[in-house]
View 1 (cartoon, helix red, strand yellow):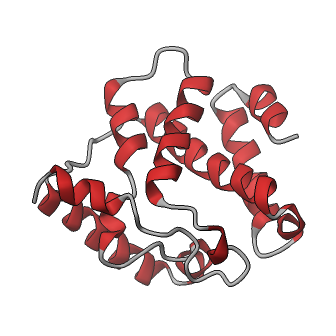
View 2: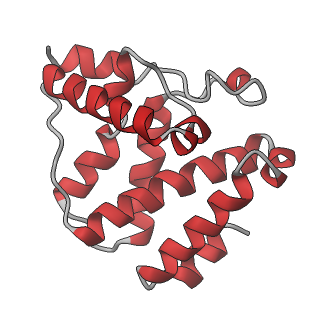
Length: 158
């Protein structure tokens, strides 16, 4: 596989299985770009590996699509199978998974969740009261405080 395949993966539609968000047309490329922007906001000197993962972390969704976070949370076995398939697909594309250190891994997780929460806040704020979004916000804040950037992230969530 080549760069055009990685490029095609950017057109995967996020939230396709969420009847309340599917119509928004958010794509993985849009998500990846905003994750990288958030990383730059949170980390003054991000590593190249962190930026690479921010820009490519969902490329493996090309075949399976964006599986619901709630479905993954409710079925850890399925979540592991999907993660393995997505990692394998990225490898086939030539989009290598970069092994991140503990801080960078948590920063990626934080930026990923924060982008999703901020997207929903912008386009469908009424949904943030249910469907796992309150728990997502709590998780984002807890992770941010672990990374000693809690005040900064809480400001972004307002």
